[in-house]
Image: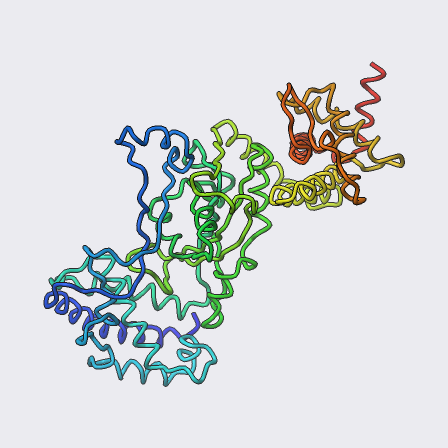
Length: 496
């Protein structure tokens, strides 16, 4: 802890005593007022097309948001049929409760201010902080959280201290513990999963987002553009990483640890996203990284699960131009989920040696090209990833080498789309596309597509698929991370 045990125990006693008195006053206030309204905004489920009305059958069966029952919340005024408990302390009424007027407040303030350890824990090194104001806010927040979570009425519970003690504990832990535990949540945008839970490791899983988290995350991260809100909302499952914590060294540590996306394990998150992309080919992404406090609380919104979020734009920018009715959602079945589990387990078992550096570099390129909104950038990133995996040991022309090696990939990872006897020609066309773009040339329409079974497929998307299949190949057969082994395989087949 950041304070001596004796001080912590005394602090708990003083806060608990004061909080009980304030809570009793709050119950009385509820009994004396018919309508308690305040300023708070609250996530409310957006109106959707009724599934009971035949008029909307077609749209309910064609819009992914509706097909997969993805909830869309909007921040609106707090529901009028509910008590806005925060207004008891900071609402419209002239008779709001002032914690500073209640017996025990001054004693608590003097105790905190008289301790250097407590002073640092409560407001860091900011000597200009209004200590009485900060303590007043802390007490009102404890009582407010208690009122919201218990849906309090005018009646004071006989076991008030027992009921309110957990809310005191979680608030004080936030200030005086030197380490605060969190779970990390990353909603996966533009994909839904057949399975409720996909276990990746002892502390990492992909799980269906509970309704309470769906609602709370809308308030935790607020975007500037409506289109970004829609993309962020377009998720049914999330990556959940358990067992994390951060050092609560000073008052503002929470901001640095939970509201800054660079403070999160982005490398691990992106490996998981890559495994999903490799298996499915879906252009998925994420817009939020959320921290859920374990046993403590900072700020909060009414009765919502407390979440502290960081905004991050890791979805292809093309999706922002679409209305929520147009957003695509890929479906991941149980067999694909098993493949994702296996791939992730295999990749995490690889040592970070020089041979495997190429693999992780190519994975990074796959993630990057999936987020490119320009076709040429997507194709260039994909070919860079292919070169990292397939060009090793070559002394000749790189296009020739990779085009000769790519059939080995599809021999081991058969595709229903790309025929084995065509993949060499396709690879050459990918390289022609890349070379033309890199050198500022102009592509003919015929150079931008490859015709498969009478359907024109854009070369940049083909390049991404080739990188996906190559990643599958080397993850399943890590000995071929030494690209010279591919030539040995080709030679053995020729000799046979």
